[in-house]
Length: 407
Image (tube, rainbow, N blue to C red; front, side, top):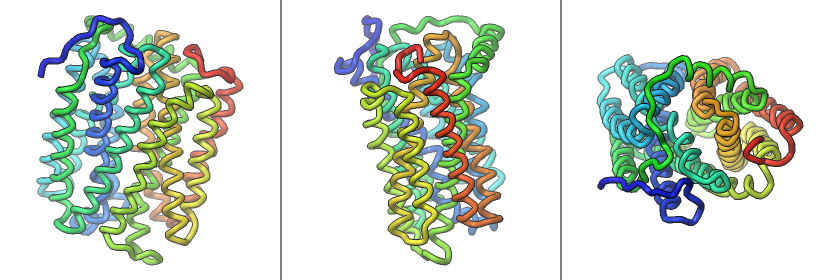
């Protein structure tokens, strides 16, 4: 289906174009996180199949997120030439094809190479999505749209982990990753059918010096630096929890089956709900206040996860997941709004820091887990989120209490 351009300059919540855009970006987020994190559900199976330690197996996640982080800025520049929707469409379909190849990997080295390529492909969505929304939607509707987009990423994370774990327990990790690859392909098709062509995008030739200057200005703004740090720290915490919680639940103390662990990953739905809900809370109470609330919520969840009972772990995972996605939604929409006012390349830099958190912070989390078990993970992730809370308080004092576009 050919996308149709809408002449109105900025789409508002409730309009047909707004609904199409949010559905399309929801599908894009779902596809991206399904492809990116389905592997996370089968890390114990990769350890068994290839004789790997938990830290080594987690490289299947870290190399993809690291490649994604590196690919964000070049693909941002490419989208300035060929268009936002073109880059996102190619990204989704190529990542679906690479997901199939990952499932067919003959050894772990080939799997890692393919995951690097997949991470670069997925960077096309992460580089462009926030910029596309900021360009095409009215400022007052951006918070809700960003919340729904992040909700799609939350559902994708849940789908990848849940489907991956359940199929892995029945048919093995290759069939698990093949099944999630099919889901990403269906999402890519839905995106292409639904997306609205850019009405406010103006193509321009590559301007390396201008792009570097825009990035440099973003890195000198204290408000944006604080938000970049928050994204890095939040993702470091979150990916550590989900990389290694499966090992904990399968091991001594809990000894759950793979199917039960997969069902536990269903609590990822909390991220979908909180992301969709937080947009309206941001519009009402402001980003500074809501970043504090969501960071504190995430910290409470981390402390619950450290307890020894399964009930406490499940509740803690629900609270951690909901708090993380809400905090990420607040921070990412804040970066988009502030970058638009300052005329800097803030959104792509935020994505770079965010996925570096997954790659670097997640790898460090693996070393902590191997050395100190879940107790070490609790201290490590709690310290990360406590730092986010401090940053959020400082940002509130620096930028004011109201979540305006200039904040």
